[in-house]
Image 1 (cartoon, rainbow, N blue to C red):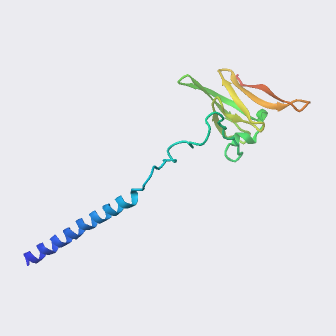
Image 2 (cartoon, one colour; image 1 turned 120 degrees about the horizontal axis):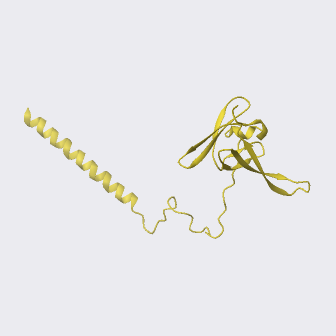
Image 3 (tube, rainbow, N blue to C red; image 1 turned 90 degrees about the horizontal axis):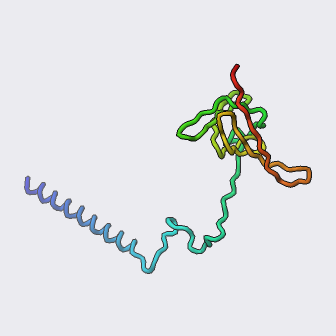
Length: 148
């Protein structure tokens, strides 16, 4: 009885090792392709010029950025924090929600960009049109209200 079990075990082991060598040989045959292959998913496009690089267009969706729904005059600064030499400001919307912004954040209906944050308040730059229809940048400063 022991001989039969031993022979059966050896046959199963031989078939298993044979199937491993067959699958590894088949993988080697399918993966070896003649010629050179460019790994395009790892590199940039070789036919694209590096002299004129287009920046991707930035689109702002008001659903994703809730601070774009409100006018600058309706937002209040409720706190300014400093951490590791970088300033953060906390804005409160009219519905009572609070959001943290940093330099470079976009705020308000007119998409004003935060240019600086200091102890006194937040300075924003927004692009507006003048009477002639020309675009000009206007600097807006939101001061933090002092507690009495």
